[in-house]
Image 1 (cartoon, rainbow, N blue to C red):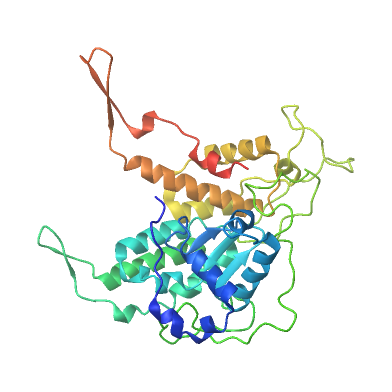
Image 2 (image 1 turned 120 degrees about the horizontal axis):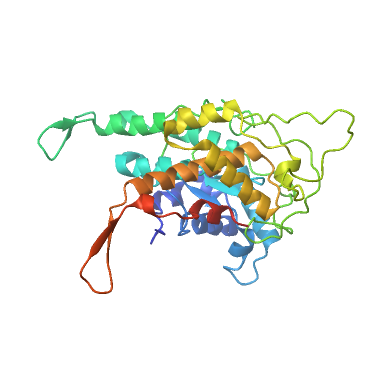
Length: 358
């Protein structure tokens, strides 16, 4: 469910880094943290065209420059390839880390992140959570027994996130600035930064055509170089001997889609990742077949197929968990004389495919 409000600390007006921003950059930061689709991990889809319509005269190009300024000041982290934006200190400043149940929702929201860069930035932030400020007293349960303390529950959620994302790069910003070890302050930015160099930040392709997967036409399915390295490695099959070009048709006789041209396939490393992260409950062969069929039908290319597959599997696991916890549904026939109970397994849906539709 979309949020109904955004939490803004009054101490923001005493934060030196925030005061160093100009009024347009400050307004944009307040705009970001008040978005209804911002999840508990501080994650947003990067939708420049949609955001540019929220103020008269604002253009995607101008919005792009403002976002770059916020990124240079380390208020946010962005990834062009996955079109995601992370509000860096949101978990700590919004008080998420103080509430175990909300931390559980944060982990679920964090598992939606596709960008390895954003994953590492988020891990660096949770490592700065001052666990020693949380109560270490056993929690009192309704049945009178004792349960794990708030500190232990939050620590377990953080450990779950580390296992899901793996070991982070010690320098997620790639700028040579180590993660501060001091207890963070309750302000949006807690690391002093030099102002951007004269002339503004470097230009990028965001704000031009094709800003977001939901607002841009699909790229032409032309052959592309192998995907960039990631946590998983895609093994591409060898071409048939005596052939200098790949086949132009699939075994079923249809033309190759970008996912076929790029040689995507389910590897042992990918199976091991899923088993380690979600356990044996998912049918990986079925989910992978659905994933491939979806992107064949869409005929679009993704910059990193293994990362896109991970995102698909995370969503599938999330929906499987929700279906398992859904109460049975009871229906009454037209005469009202008979009832029939349905369970979540009686229904199928294409929620994951809908979320990946362009």
